[in-house]
Length: 343
Image 1 (cartoon, rainbow, N blue to C red):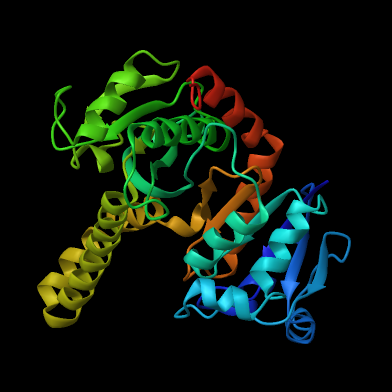
Image 2: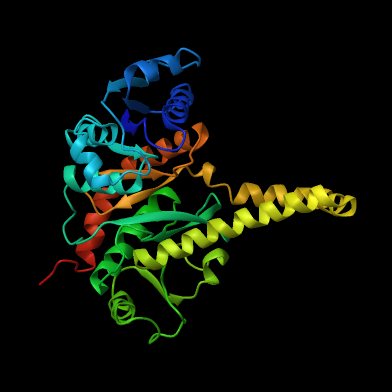
């Protein structure tokens, strides 16, 4: 039985989405037990309205939550028993094997840094994100690639980028089940000498390292799925991630507006409905649930802030799968093979 600690109070939808997602998972034939951390009274009231298995879901008391608009450092200092800190401590003590939160991203990163240890050879943590791709990944045709960092480390050294590549490859090999993930650096050109000095030096190191490094890729290669793992610093990654999310929302808004204005447009969209539904299915991040915060000695999955019950359920599954696949051990081995931390 894998035990996952869930920050049940974080996220735009709060305890309702988290508890309902955990409850739904508890009814499935899985080996996952969820410790839902938060306001006991509020969580109990939600459970009164849904079916769940008490054998796979336990409530754990915490006091307070980090608001989505709060300064994370100040909020954690003021709320030492808040849900994200209590959930993190359950993992650090061995009572749980992984952490899931849809709450404040900065608070999740900072709580992890306070409670967990950084892995040997890893100087900075990386927050990953999944993105939809035209190509499929792994034996099950995963329509998502992995990009990191997308916000935990704004500027990265060459060694940081190599560490991100190692951690992303380890994660992809477990969750997407890609035997030898294709790793690429995101740059302004595919040529070996393109990019910032950090990218150029990381390129040199990755060429002689143990990973399946395919070189540099450009932004247009991201949705094509040219690489299974896209590596960049957190500033660039965050800009790209927000752009990808924005494009998808604009396309949906334009289609909705067109459908409401003219009959012939509505008829045309109806004829394309099958393709539109397939596109929606392939780009539905809720099916994936969450993405990892990598670099610490524990499994941490950050779910989208807008996660509803289905996304939370799937994020918990991803956390359990990462723990079952020994994600932390694979990163340790990969960092050692890549010579990270060698003097």
